Image 1 (cartoon, rainbow, N blue to C red):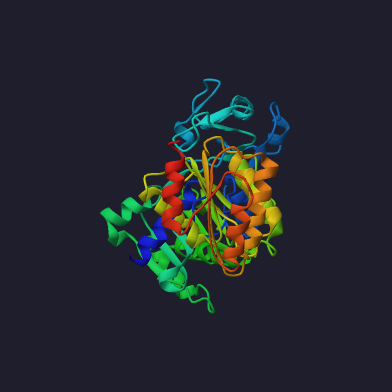
Image 2: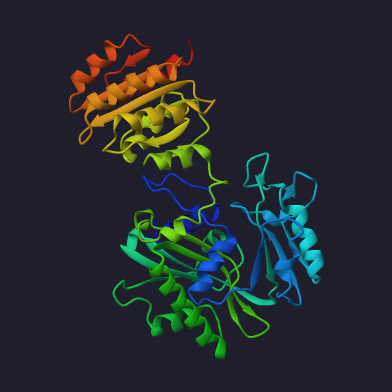
Length: 420
């Protein structure tokens, strides 16, 4: 796969606003206004804006007089402009020239659920609305900085065809895509930023402005421990400015200790409740559509477990990686999270004991089964450190725990258990 293909796929995954299975990393998603706040703090040129969090909050616009306002519902999903609210109001994005009308539009959005092609069927509750200065865009370009495995470091992806599906641009007109590796030690040089500005077709004074914006975005990329900053569009305006109109940022989960302020911005009200609960106990959980709950140690093993369930005709209900240093109390919490999903009709425990002691897992499974009053079948496959002792603990428990010899046996038994 080409370096651009890798970059485009990553950017597309992050655009959705939802978490994807990427090993044991838990993605942090920010609302649009939060991303713009970070850009503003980094000196990047953006639209001026205000945020309304309650109805009839017109006071926020008293010192914000602009020729035209853009009113945008803030949720972690795309397609807002074509969405519809549960109160019948249409569109999560509106434009008006009157401040009082902007407030009225915001009132129709706040406290109601916006339904788009990227939201659940019942939509997402709108708790905040951003009111921004409308920008007269004369031209749209695309810019993305992200870490790329193929280049063993950051790359800059640029296209003069902004404001549209970048993957479609790459497929239909690949000559309009420029992928430029960034030397992590030197960063983006002036020569490199000017070269990208030229490729983006910025002319005259706008060329220098665009180069400066690119350099500021790189500085922000480093400052906030980002793994991706996507600007679509990076726009040229009728006022002779270069502005980041829409931004999507994603961050290195391992840098949370350095970026506490940013991670505290996470909008947990929109996140999956089970994912939020799991993160409190250092468990990596992602909900899926099946009915076989998976409790596994290690991201690779978790992926393999889900694959072999599918091969045996079943459907995994989740990705749940308890990690290498799991303790009994985490096993209990993992079971409680799995059982909180009404779709789960069986649980498959698949643990390879390397760092983790299989006996610890076995005791955790037995205790969790007792505490939760488990009534669904649990298939247990344990291999590695103290696996034999763990097997004895499972067999002597007197509970509805089904031992398995290997992964294929475990998956087969899990699928069969649903038929009884």
